[in-house]
Length: 333
Image 1 (cartoon, rainbow, N blue to C red):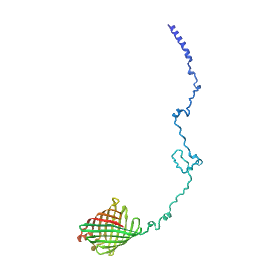
Image 2 (image 1 turned 90 degrees about the vertical axis):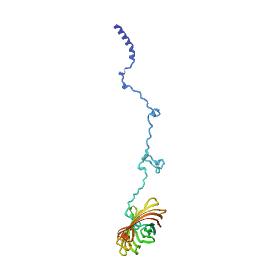
Image 3 (image 1 turned 120 degrees about the vertical axis):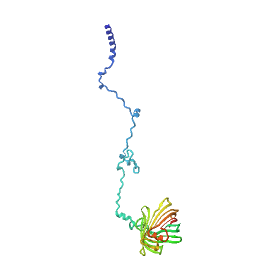
Image 4 (image 1 turned 45 degrees about the vertical axis):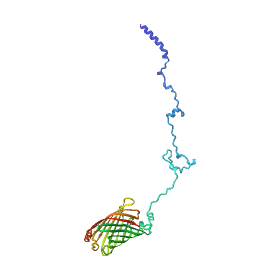
């Protein structure tokens, strides 16, 4: 039995030997001496390379090294965008421009720019005039029907003017008060004048005159202000303050508040005037300007007497205060 197994093994080995002899023994081969064939690189016309690799972008042109004069192109008038690639020209490419520094302004330059007479001088010294009837109004109240006026105007240049001012009141056909002022005004700033002159009172009582001096102009916030002091021929003293403001509701509809205060230095019973704070008047008028020269209005006015003036009015059977509705017109020319 053992002999049979041995015979079969020998037959199998004999049949396998030729096949094994044909196979290569890779363990004994020198791989370092074996050169692997090189894979050919795709050429520029190879479509595979064009799909795998993006096309190379062209290199930016350096214009600083280009001779534009030799190319026959005038580049001086062409706009240059420095944000574009390759457009960073050297400063040497820009043409040389003369640069003249501006000299500093001196006091002599400032003096030469001013007209003769300094900052108060004006080039226009022509004669002009202006007249304003600020209030011409009537009412119908318990004391009776009344009419009141107040106006002012001037004639002259921008610096020197002759002013006039007047106001008064009539009740039931009788003049209760009336005065007129003639003043010389001198401009001391853009918005303010100093004034000096005379005032003459026709009523109440006997007529008399006062020396007058004061200021008038436009205060901050556009308040029109007038403050005047008076010295009478018989030693009386007085002062009058007036403030008014124009509030534009529309371009033509204007609301005008006004306050006027009178003070006197001593009692004058013949004229119904007491010393100290004599009277105060506050008015509110709403006007509509059909034109800048003509504007009707309606309003309400409250007048009150104080101190000795109120006592003198009570002795005459009059009230110390009065409120009335008025209708009037405002005009200038």
